[in-house]
Length: 271
Image (cartoon, rainbow, N blue to C red; front, top):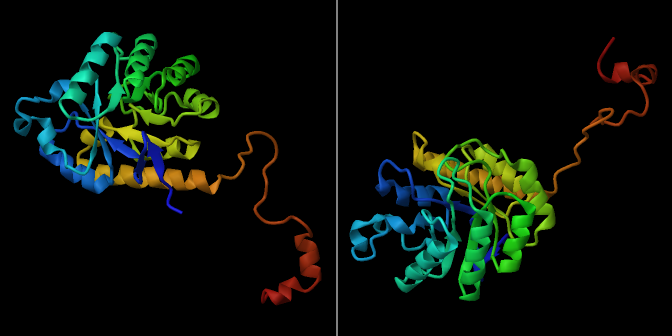
């Protein structure tokens, strides 16, 4: 049976979402989309010129990709809501990634304003995917607000530091019924693989791919890592022994001395 990911009523076979920022040349985006196998791509609405789409970022996005516009630049819930409504009116669709960030140094999302925007837009029929700190209480507020998923950061935006918030994301995976999509900070395919092994439903990667020496190859590597991590999660990883004695791979019954006394040495060709 195919391992489908249903999000907003849409069946996705790829669990890697990609972004559109920081590429040296936006013309690379189609090749990255192809190599990674991604089906969802996020873009900042402030980078789209709806009056002249042929000359803007959106012209480089392949038609088969599902657009996930984001509200990057919004500092309050009202600004995010306005951007989402403008996007839908312009025909971009009803999926929206909510980003409400008033902190200009660390670029950490404002949980309260994010939940307010999520509630308003969910009631208007948007498929809302809020970017958030991996805080259990904020996640619960987002569930109650009608979010379709939660998108906790692995590390600060653009840092490529990996799963710095691993333990907190683990709590969300245990406690939150919505899909968890790890977003921001994943710089290496191994980090995305680890997030998927933990049970994340998907990963969104932008800087880790766009800032690579070869973004197309890195996109392929992230796609493979996400698939491998998901396969490992479904396979059911073995138990981890954190304390106490080791657990041998081979049975310990009997002994080497007894084996030799029973003729084992002759069987092995020893004199």
